[in-house]
Amino acid sequence: MANLFEAAGMDADAPRPLADRLRPASLADIAGQDHLVGLDGIVTRMLESGSLGSLIFWGPPGTGKTTLARLLAKETDLHFEQISAIFSGVADLKAVFAAARQRRQTGEGTLLFVDEIHRFNRAQLDSFLPVMEDGTITLVGATTENPSFELNAALLSRAHVLTFRSLDQQALDKLLGRAEVETGKPLPLDDDARASLIRMADGDGRAVLTLAEDVWRASRSGENFSAEALQEVVQRRAPIYDKGQDGHYNLISALHKAVRGSDADAALYYLARMFDAGEDPLYIARRVVRMAVEDIGLADPQALGITIAARDAFQFLGSPEGELAIAQAVIYLAVAPKSNGAYVAFKAASRTAKQHGSLMPPKHILNAPTNLMKDEGYGKGYAYDHDTPEGFSGQDYFPDELGRQTFYDPPDRGFEREIRKRLDWFAKRRQ
Image 1: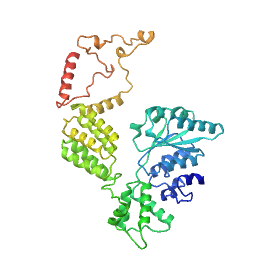
Image 2: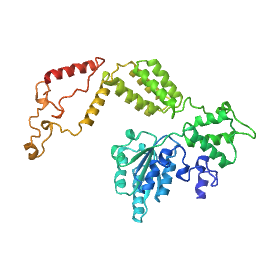
Image 3: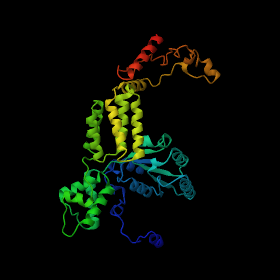
Image 4: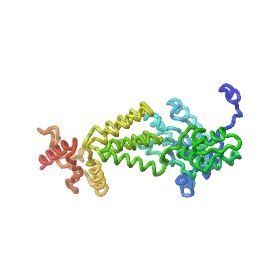
């Protein structure tokens, strides 16, 4: 092992980073995740039941995802294996699965922790399914991205998603207190500087401990930093607002309402504030996509494509260059014709589906692959629309017991004017 350190130019006895030294040794030591590991937390209940299924940990960096995975392996007597989706390929996965199968033959289970699991492609994610189903591994995947968007449905159906929260001010201050005990010296900061350092960490426990180390390294004997001096020392500005608290929701709400109100300038102002505060651009991009389908809808069918393209452009260009693509999409949405017709229609259809979800579709639109089903009237009387002169048969497709319903009522704006004409034409032919 010594040769390994020497080859890398490292001292085998080099001090460990503070964040590593303070890594929690028990579930009770994990800060800021009481909803998971507190007395009534879901993880606590799982462990009490003696059953731990595959899990997906979703949350910001530095909130304890890796630590909790390690502790779960310890609590359940499973062998802990860790890989990163960034550095692992198909060959690595096959080797990990093979080793897990060998352990299983000796009676030892494996908890496989996959960091950045959303980086795997669909085929790689599918390779986990058989070893999850037969119990070869207990998968714990960690991601900073929304699993609903980034992971496939087959994997999600076999795993329980647990959401990690950004650490609040109290949790971060508690970590700093533990760091002071560990090092045996107080942080050389006045009250305002300490509060500023906590804001700089932005809910990231690892970041707050790294910043604390930077402060101790930079301080001289008897020196105490103010908030202004702290910024010079660590070369980092405190965020304008706390992304986990009210400022985060206030600004995204203001951006959404400015777009809905067709005020491109105000929308750009709030967008710029969010970028300046260090908000995750992909979070903003997702919300902009939501605006396209909720507030513009079919009044301008191009709006959704433009917002998706803006998201893709940001992922391709990165920050700050890719921010312009999101800004361009925001301008487009703000000046586009507005309609929530599709949004309202889908909500109305959802309510009706919940109330009448057991009704059978009319038999004439059901396929009849067997003679018995043909005898029962399946498919009888169905008119193939393409065989009609106008490509429209006018048949009723609602369940017989429900009768015809109207959910979508497009306003006379933008492209929905054309949709309204088509719907009126269909209604006349249907009558």
